Length: 69
Image (cartoon, rainbow, N blue to C red):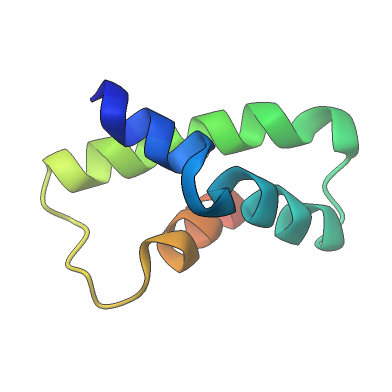
């Protein structure tokens, strides 16, 4: 779990890119970190429930979760 969290927060710029996308969608800057964290939590839950099938890139899936939140 820790390695997965590090990957999402640090590797490949997931946090930076997803929060930039959310900012362009009108999310206020002070809400970006909380929204990203909630999105990661939902992503992990979805992976554990086998709801993520890999039909799209993980970054896009995470962005969609955050957008829907």
